[in-house]
Structures are given as C-alpha cells and as structure tokens.
Image (cartoon, rainbow, N blue to C red; front, side):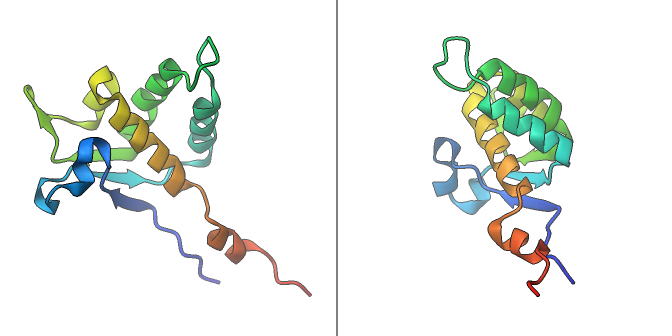
Length: 126
C-alpha cells in the first residue's frame, strides 16, 4: 500500500495581505511536517488559555514558536528595516505575532492527518 504523505510543503501566509501580492513579492514559508510529540505539544499550546480565560495564551504560543519554528520552518522574502528576517526573528518579536501564529496553525494543519489519509490507514472490512 502506498500512502500519500508529503514531508515538506510551501505555504503563502495571508498575513497583512501577503497572499494578494504578486507571487514574486510574496513571503513564502517552507514547512516540514511535525514529529508526533511536537504536534501534541503544539496542539496543547493552542488549547491553553490566558490567565483571564480570554483566549489563547500568547506567552505559551511565543515559547512554542521559539522552540518549534527554527526546527520546522524556513521563511523566504521577508525583510524589515534591519534587513532580511529569518524564522528566529519572527518568533522573537511581537510585531510578527500574527504571522507567527498563522505559521504555527498551518504547521499543525499540515502535520495532522486528513480524513483521506486516515481512510488509507483503515483495515478493509471483511
């Protein structure tokens, strides 16, 4: 049996209208599929609530970004006043929080088996 499984994908984040720009001007991110333990940890981070219960705990997401993004993501075509921005820098600065969150969510999405993938792994009914 052959299962369709890509270990790397390239995404175009929607952040700040990036996905509407000419393709040559767009920020792109190469994502490697998360290992199982990292996927579970990331999913738990997205479920963690802020101290007041108002939403996702950005401190937890920030910590996850610093740990996970350098191992699973490479960003292309993003610069600021200090020059080329790498994945480590977007995980460090609040100005990139929305982009960081979008990349982490997409990373979780591409690392989670789809219904079609799950269908392939089910034993046939006898």
